[in-house]
Image (cartoon, rainbow, N blue to C red; front, side):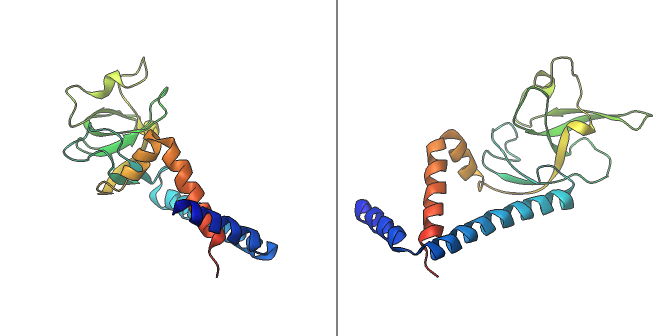
Length: 181
């Protein structure tokens, strides 16, 4: 059963030589660093501080569902009504994915945007910071350029049940450390 495999794992770890353990730890570090490099690379390519986001609510259904992963790109094209943007507002940790419904371009080149979730009855003014009626380019993290349905459910489950995250990370770490070349 599980206890036996845990026991075996412990013995494998114990019987491993220090050198091999160091080798595996370095392997793990390389995997983590590679992932970070890919992420940073994506940030540069997409000109977005968060190239990939997970949809956390149903406010954009039927276009996007909870758990869909969106790929973002900022780009230089002007914003238009109908664009799906991901934006961050003061006082809110989590970025919001909604559709632009109004665009005001000023002579200064600044742009005021009003957003709304497709599935919401009202626009997002209630979500913006207290004195704010519009969002501007600096609030926008990126525009949605593509998506993968439901893959982000893993992220949502890990957010809702942190224990799952710790167990998964622990199991993956043990797996990397105990895999023999």
